[in-house]
Image (cartoon, rainbow, N blue to C red; front, side, top):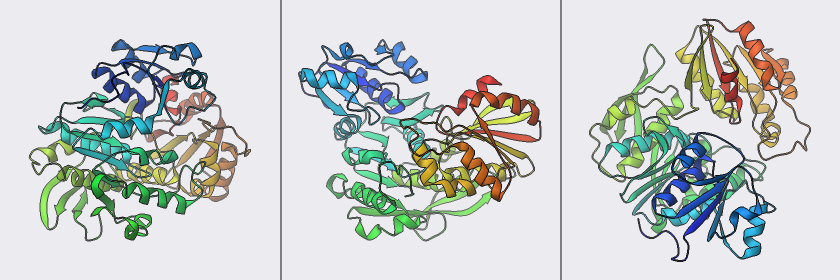
Length: 456
């Protein structure tokens, strides 16, 4: 890797260092001999990893913590009135958004793979990463979750290929420098920032047309929103599909007795490999084809990669097994958008056709709950009983007056399977009364719903 930053920059401070992406950047800076510090209110696995590396971590945001630093990197969640950011700007210290720094970082590599899409980014990035790790490429890998097969969310190799997720929120992926881009799907989300679906589509088009030297854009032609903007994309387009003729296709799809998919991956009529996935869901067939299409752009040496895919059991919080409780199988899943919820429940139903599926869902942000309300109402059709806990606010205030109780009441007008719980701490008693060996229990959401497992 070439020199990342200007010569005068030695000490770098990251505001929001505990986030999955920021912690990865901190590790890269540390490996490149920068003196790294950071602040974050949240505790977690990522912060403990950084502390183990000897990084100076603060659990609050104080103006004094940026003094003497040469560069401040901040996430999109950090507001302009953050005391550290205010002090850095007052002192004339250079400040840089996470997206801008990622753009600098990715520009250092011959091949930069950026995985975008409303859904499936983390799983697809994980699939690309575990395959590349198996090759001699020695890549740099930045994944939006812990990946057991990698032992981390980050791998820092010495090769000339980097892989990272490209998130559309705040249009941050427009800062990235990449040679190979993926668009897995386009859907309504982040409507606190985007005006509407057309705004989202145009932002993905802008991303697609931002590739280095017009690069390569790998797109899912099973997605109607992608198809509607294909004629606006100027990059070299490579297509993938599970149902239509495309450059990369899944053929001969079958499901085993456990509901897991098995299929051939075909490139222009040539069978590249036969895979039997350990992760469920039709959506993961699509993610796998996308990942193989990306790999094929940097190497045609695919020996052993089918076995790597077969042995991949998913990133953390993606249908992650959490053991048993009163005989019931416990699962954690990150789904927080109606489309993701439907896909997850469909996959679980295929795996467990005769089980009672019980879900505890924590809606994520008031805006998403309000703007996608009708879609949330119909998303839980494959669920036998739904517990709804209070909305996870994240960065928002409830200026809309929307609650999980509203969602429960509307769902009950249609299917009658929802129960408003309120505070998450009310869940354990309900689960103790309702779960047994015939049940599958899923704690679902992008907030802190995972804490329920520690309460059982």
